[in-house]
Image 1 (cartoon, each protein chain N blue to C red):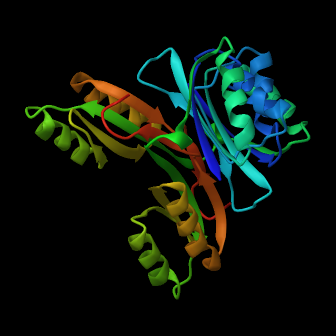
Image 2 (spheres, one colour; image 1 turned 90 degrees about the vertical axis):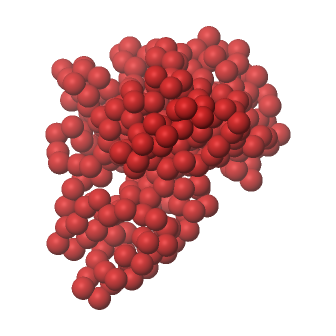
Length: 160
Length: 160
């Protein structure tokens, strides 16, 4: 099962290295990681997704909270939240496959953001499952390059 | 000036911590960081943006390349590439401000993905400048929560 941790870290050199080191020491690798500014300039939000390791998550969260660079830790797997990620895919196109690829893009509400002689670059957003599905549909055409942002998440409702 | 580094790292525990540690040792903090799977299951793409530090970037790239977990480093500031990030914003709404906020969303092609009693949650994608502009437009209404993915980037044209 996938778990999503949201960690608010102070904006200072080494904050991400310090926070991710907690996982490294336990030999846990991430499914994805993203970190960027929040509404507060002094704080960044680090969102990590990991597969399994349920038993350790509680003590990992405690270890993170004890770090000076960490302001807050939430296990988003446990609450109602929306999650989204963005993917860029450069897919091979020929005269024959263009229509099919455009149809896949339409179904997944993806946008074409670039065209080459032999490729099309598309942008798509959705939850992890939808992004996985989109990639699966494009794979048979030939994926030349793929870049995902990793997950960001936000609580549903009015709470911040 | 903003610089974007794209680093392909092997999918193993501690890869992100090892790669980001190069920056920590030099006291450089990130503007954003994102890491997720690529088309190759054994490799993840880590995209880092930093402000300034031009003089050090070359030797940082060399230091990264020397690491066992690193498969490739590219300075994307130097080539033609598209960059995108995704932002989720939970903004305060009242009966009076709803229309104005919806107009901002329309201009920036943002989608409403959630409504609360007092807030609206919107999703938007674009390059960093566009995302910054969107946030600037929403700030006067009151931003309750904000989450950005960090930048992902892809070369223009057919090259992978």
